[in-house]
Image (cartoon, rainbow, N blue to C red; front, side, top):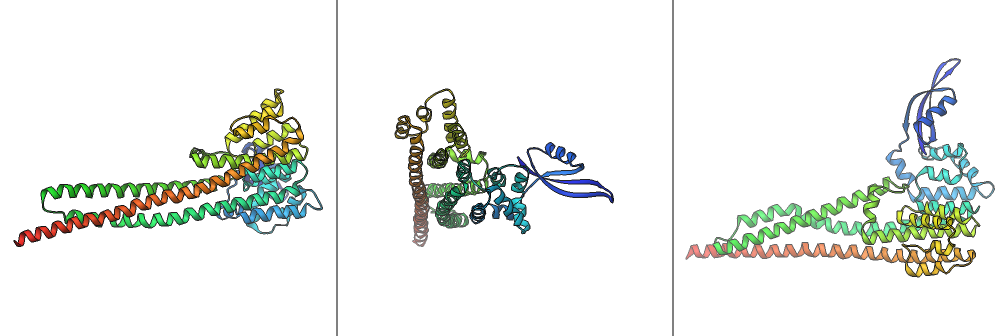
Length: 406
């Protein structure tokens, strides 16, 4: 499903009339069919694209929290879908109207509130999973505070990582800038003031060449790391709401970060599954919904395998006893004999995964500090080494002057 903007011509008693309308449909052909049913003629169809400012506002934590709180407060006297529709109808800011247009089209076509929230493509899969689980259990109003807590907690984690990376990046950038701009001048001075003694000259030039190679490697590593980081940030920001894309696959292959994302995926999906089971949602629907609650393919495949095993008649505990869960988690799930215990065990696993994710998060931060410290130590060490080379050059020059004077 996607939002489309179509320019349409209608025949009226006063002559042709041109109008611009938006549609929330799978393909452009579906839009043409819909326009034909309304008696219009297609002039142009284009996929709706948000401006950078609209994307920034739509994907901000403040906007997401305000939207969910509005649905929560209005749904006390009506259904969540009607509450969301009234929020959209009451909005008079053109930019926000444009942001909410996909949800308006989804609701107008009779889709549910969760489908409308998905159409906005501003919430991550963990948040949508919490909301969908609560909605399936007919407790969306109770689930919204948990979704808001998840959003704010992830924002804190993001801020912590971003603050750390920004500080470390500033340190590295300062050193690299000094190396980049001062390298030519320093190396030029070294080569222009080399010792005159042939034996010392050979050793001197070897050291200068090694120093130049070291600085070049440091500069390439710094610029490469910086470009990779910027590319990942922009890619994740632009693709927020999508299930998978090339940058995400590259990031998941990084050992520690991949494990961190897997823990977050299990935490979100396990908690969503537990919430649905407590709301008496059928176990088959719960497993299917849980597989859609994460963007990590490894986690999604776990729920798909469990659902397939359950359909083959395997007991629920044995169906959930699959990798990539840890040995202790699998033993706890394999021993299940009562469906009433499943939600409790899943909540326990979710809490353990949340704790593991926090530990890995701290480890990632400290590892970043450590690697940056190594980089800075090499940079400073090479600068001190450059002073030693400078002393060799000065000693050679003084020796040449003294020899000439004698």
